[in-house]
Amino acid sequence: MRTDEQPERRARRPRRLPRRRSDRVEALTTWVLCGLVAATLMATALVGGWVHAFASDRIRAEQSDRRPVPAVAVADAPVVPGDGGVGPTYGAVRWTAPDGSERTGSAQVPPLTKAGGAVTVWTDDRGDVVAPPLGSEFPLVMTATSVVFSLLAGFVLIVFAVLGERRLLDRLRAAEWGAGWRRVEPVWSGREDSGRR
Image: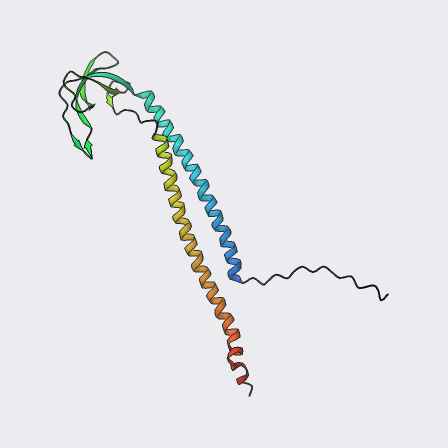
């Protein structure tokens, strides 16, 4: 072997610090929590889509089954005080059913409607008075409400999961510190050599 030749050196990878058990558990639980957040977001999107489709179908069904019909108030409608103003007023009305028969019943009318005044009532296919169909804002309101509650439920679940993780990690770390202290304390306190004298 020539002196100017040097033995081939292997490239060394930098040494990694040893990982404690609590570090490995924390890495694992962090991935689990990230998966829980992703699952919560996906579930919220699915619930929101389902609720929006359900609410839209309900509006279409109500709009196809209900129709406005002109009616006449039979008696004067009173004013009913409600929360922060005038509440809904119901009065006796007369209308013509799809089969041509005259019908009389109670329906929601504007406050202070006089007898003989024209009003509009909503009827079904049989000519019975029903509530007006839901407004076009119904799917949006229902979707927003379901998304908010889904996110709140997911948030509560994640908070409890994080608190459980912290408690588990605190116990693991305390046990590791205790074991380390039991190994090191005799050397630091000088008790290790006291038995040999």
